[in-house]
Length: 146
Image 1: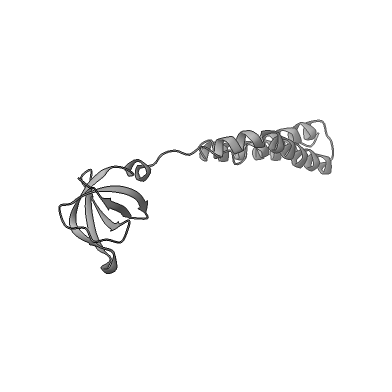
Image 2: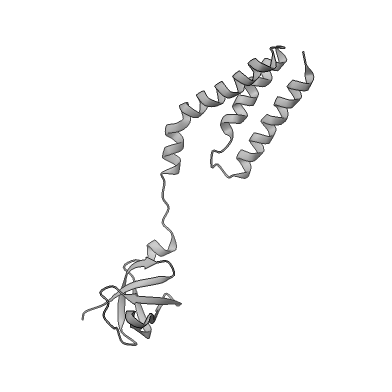
């Protein structure tokens, strides 16, 4: 048995596991960790390096293909962020909104935001508006009708 190769594959396994833990369950290197484990068993059985590599690549690929549906499901999850939660809320205009001049600010939940009107109309100071969408750091708003 070539202990150098056993140690090599054990170190690879540890590196891939640490990388997986460091990426907070992003599933980046778990397949390679399992492939390293398989290759390490081949090294323990004193099978040639070429076959160890075949085991590493083959097992990693098989595990990757087998877990692909799970990975796609995990990556497909979307979490609401603050800007998505702001849509539909009301805000007060603190600086008149004029899209042509690129001016306008609103206060939403105590925070000052740049704002533009949804339909391009001007909106006066102290008007109450509804947030329609978020465009970068600007709120797109429409004036509320009484």
